[in-house]
Length: 116
Length: 111
Image (cartoon, rainbow over all chains, first blue to last red; front, side):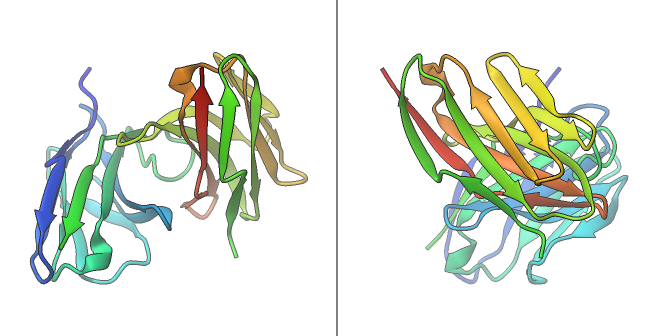
């Protein structure tokens, strides 16, 4: 059974640009959640999607957005990049609402974004 | 304020030794507590999930304990191996559908 796939694994952008990251969940999983991980802040929750609907959102500015498609694949977008957006962006999939409650979360390997 | 604090921040041990990592939380209402292992440059991998009624849960050489009264959890690693070198993250789920992450303990195992 294939795991959670995130693309691209690494990318470099400059300030002011935008970026789109992709996440393909484990087959059959309907929940996808996104996280930002930095050395100083640790893992921080961005948002969760379930059956194409955003179910929950963390405390990030509106420059961070996401969506989920009918096949459960998800994308997140960051517009007007800032230096502080440099981070490892992780997505996790779960059978049912795994970010919350007792559902098991399965993480991808992450997309390492560097903003210059 | 919902918080999860882990200690120590970093730890160095010799291969074959045991170690214990701590997690204190002030999350309410509590739903469950999870421990994840994250290798450098990789995504976190779940080790255990414990609900309010569970005191101990094992996954191979990893044993997690939970004291819901004192709001403390520990992760005990037995007979450490070089492959145990990683960050260990404690995550508490609130019944209000929020996940609160600790900042992790960085463990290094040397031969």
